[in-house]
Length: 220
Image (tube, rainbow, N blue to C red; front, top):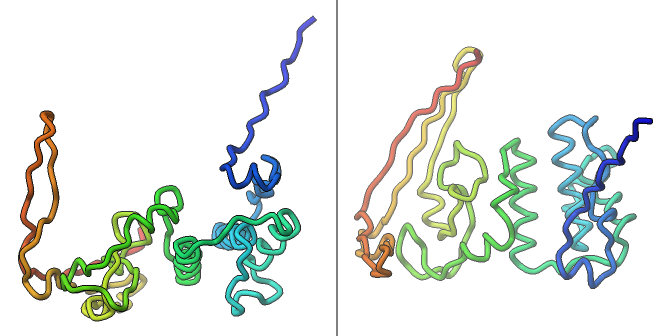
């Protein structure tokens, strides 16, 4: 008689804080969202993470049909008061994801994590090379999505130096963009190279430079 072996159950790996709070692997796993359209699925996942960290989403996303609200309510029903501590970089992570979702931009959740944002933080603006009193985290290229290689901590003045504008071209779109790096033309180390003998070599960063570009998108 043929025997059918049961498929092994895949469990969700938990972080120490979830284990300490008594959150089971089944609770960490979100409901099946396959039937939802992509945009609503992302909103639901975002609301779920708001609830997982005990954070209330922005009020403008709490209307009855909002997928973000639906995910938040589902997460609240699952986690209750057993929530993870939301530190400053976690709040920034949720805020950036919300901005990306409302603007229809892609957000790279695999690499762009609260820990990555913490490592990205700096006291000096990489563009003006001045100390940061007021800072913002934004995309380096406004025509691209929210990805680990396209985010930088910069001053408000440097952020305003970026510019882009778009036009409709038939059924497509044309976008122009511009940016300035090292606005004050300071000399600083751009990167450190370590060879096989563990010797370090410092590469100077480029001086003041600017970028102009055009991006044309046409449907196939």
